[in-house]
Length: 326
Length: 270
Image (cartoon, rainbow over all chains, first blue to last red; front, top):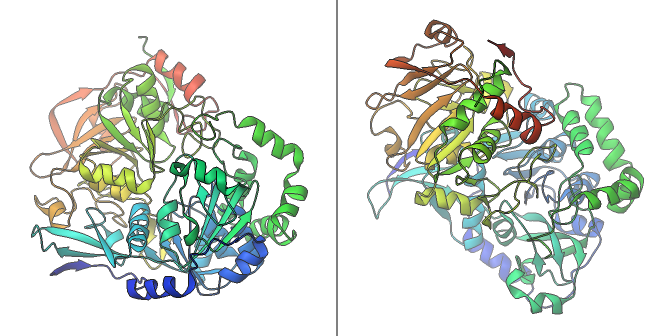
């Protein structure tokens, strides 16, 4: 294939054979319980230097409790797939967890600008769907996926994509390199002890993000019986063999919305957005100290920083159930 | 319908946009700002059968209003009574297949060929003056939908000769084959730029921006004074209608009762 144009951005080279070998060696197909604490899951399955992906964001069903634990454990040198995310990348950057970001939509703010200016992070430009398509390719076990967007723009120039002559049609088409994250974090509505997981409602790319990953941590609002999964198999989003850890985390997406279960917390979202946007770095440090470093777990965070009254309000105010649990 | 004489710039642009929506067409709408409010207004008042796609895979919702304080986007109110809840890749595939008539975007900057910048302002790529959120879904929307509509404010720093960064493609350099040459689908591209004071299209041959219509409270000269480049000017420049009291009532009471979006911009009194 003739390469007509190519981006200059750095990317992790696709390695479908390496990924298959990893799956063969490391991913058990046994039905064994993977339930563990968030401390154990992040400690065992997130390593410094990993490529990290997660689904959704701090507005909708993002793995917020796992991200806070990851920051507490002060993971380093992560490369983050920043597809359609708001403040999470800023928090990770401010905490010194991240050295590279693939940019889809990463939210605005001075926290990121400071990290860029000080050379603490580097970015490669993509777009939301070019990153989700790269995960799709990773989840298909193929090295790249053609797409009919991204070409022509400066975004392409600073990405890792290539525009080639398609050998079938003879016309230009853009190729996106597959991504197989070292570790993915997904928050779900329901999951059994083995990792069979259910997500209800809209999403970004949970299946692609889960299945492309080497290591996969699921946090779940509740653990349900496997017989319940088997009674309604059409509702399973992610099958157990892709999953390495199951963390029970009620309100795990807080301050985001888990549709059908609890609403977002607009006050907290406003507080964290204000902190990452502020030109005063101390505001973000205060935020992180209050909500992340000064608590030892998600449960302590909920008890001491959010409180029962607020949690009950969030549940009460999520009035839409149809399509989710009923 | 009663013409209104006191409204904000954002209310004006949303009211212009709502009247330009087409019934029985599909729109991939970015984010939770003025484009989304425009679609809500259009759907409630004029065009009940428009189909709205959002990046989180929501297809044709009938959102609950008033919206969530964090915006009518990526939450259960925003996705209410949709025909399908899918995901980002699915919506992108539907656009890639040609099912999406219009892409509807906001932008920081636009150039004469409808290329748009939402990445950075000032400096260069490696040392930007100000860095913004990135392409988000705008690149695929501007690439794959049949026609791209932009909604922005008319300002010299926004309508620029040359962008600081081309985040999402318009007609690129304006040459006839530029988009196809970059791997984008045939027959797609920029369609309209809507501001509170003027509406622009593009010349069919040169792909250069063309002034089509102005608000009744400005002149063509007023419009040109707010642009860094001079657009082509239609033989007959149409006059846009005033926002109506019905539109403003719906916006202020039901669609954005907290004034989070419509409160932006100066008040216009005519």
